[in-house]
Amino acid sequence: MIIEIDFNSDEAIYVQLCNQIIMGIATDQLKVGETLPSVRQLADTIGINMHTVNKAYSVLKQEGFLTIDRRRGAVISIDADRIRALEEMKRELLVVLARGCCRNISREEVHALIDEIFDEYK
Amino acid sequence: MIIEIDFNSDEAIYVQLCNQIIMGIATDQLKVGETLPSVRQLADTIGINMHTVNKAYSVLKQEGFLTIDRRRGAVISIDADRIRALEEMKRELLVVLARGCCRNISREEVHALIDEIFDEYK
DNA sequence: ATTATTGTGCTATTCTATGTATAACAATAA
DNA sequence: TTATTGTTATACATAGAATAGCACAATAAT
Image 1 (cartoon, each protein chain N blue to C red):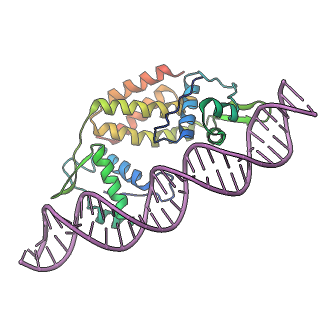
Image 2 (cartoon, rainbow over the protein chains, first blue to last red; image 1 turned 60 degrees about the vertical axis):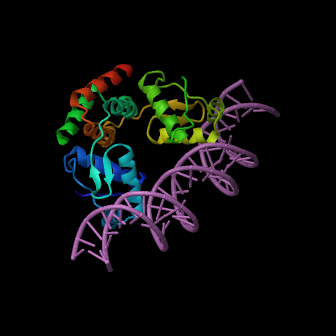
Image 3 (cartoon, each protein chain N blue to C red; image 1 turned 45 degrees about the horizontal axis):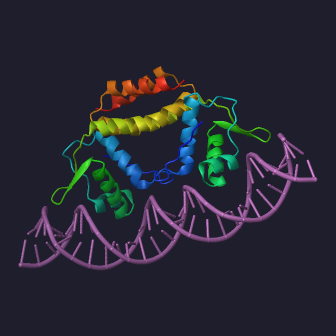
């Protein structure tokens, strides 16, 4: 899987890494059970520090997107807490949709956008 | 309009302020043409520094949610660049929906969530 | 068994963002 | 005239982000 970091972004590198990996899972480019590269390996590939990758992995572990096994390394394994996920999603959507609503983006346009994105996801 | 800041949040105070004001516009609690309190006044009400409020207002001005008039102060006035707003919304939704998709949140559940939120908005 | 690689922990440093604090200025309102 | 406004500038303290180097025990590869 190709990971691209925007070093000019105001978003932290480890956050970008987390988001790209999560989007990789959503698009089925990364499948449950697959292993990610070691922190040193991925850091070398991207050209960043080992600890930055380690932080991303730690966050993903904390959020329940992967487990870290001594033997196999970082393994994709979803801990699907649907209730918490729905609550979190609503909190985030409230902010995102407010911006759109102010710009006169209609309910239908958002629905279309959702479908468009879901078609790319599994 | 009531503004509540969570000082234990990891989100910056000025970002919370921006989001609450934008959500205030979306829920029609703040209407176009209305004026916001002066930076010193609002800072005093919330119990934060003047510059923190000023930064929030500056960001909102930059993003096109209000204009700042010497005479009237900060006035709500939406600069509706729909195309840019749609692009920005898609970028944000890609990240939010990926998290939900991994947690097996269905397309229909998201649509329901969108409707639920839009019912609160204008 | 030896070597290499792994995740993890620790300390340290640099840089940036955030929030607070004063002070000052010109423009406007009272 | 006086008070308040938005704005700008500087300074300081704190926290987060990213890098760097070192070390350790556990595992994999040879």
